[in-house]
Length: 63
Image (cartoon, rainbow, N blue to C red; front, top):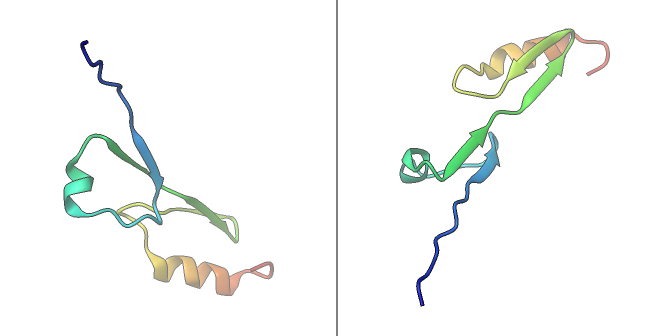
């Protein structure tokens, strides 16, 4: 009996900590969270600046 391999992806959000090996593996796909604060949008990816987000939150009357 021949085994058929299933094709799959493991999708995680940007809060998930993947090992360096997992980051290189095409099975894993990391999707960034989007955070909105005080009229600005912050994407939680490699360009995310936490200090900018915290500053924006401090300036907001809603946060």
